[in-house]
Image (tube, rainbow, N blue to C red):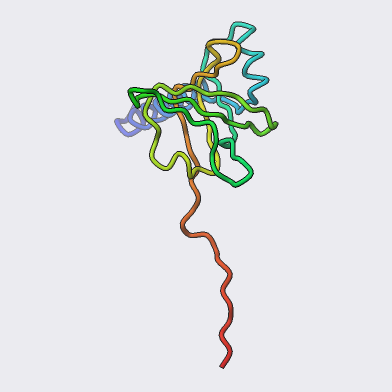
Length: 138
């Protein structure tokens, strides 16, 4: 075999291994109800839950409690099914956390009432949103 063919087969083999390992890490987004049921059935792998931070009538975020040492916090998240859930995160509050439009928590239920997030992903509002432009008259 030529050197080029061997190199090509090697690259293809590496690509196949990468694809197979990434498929194993793929996870679906679940609701808190589904995540709790999965945890009660013995699933210990991390689960992705999508939602928003709980907001009051004035639009302000509610339910964030920062730990005394400021290295952990608890917040209330509302999933896409409308279920509110208290979430614990053992890291400081991320920058722009309160401004986030959507939150993805990756973790598991440690107790029946507390979802423990290992990682938080945030979708912050875009600074490039369209604004109404009024035409000027001459």
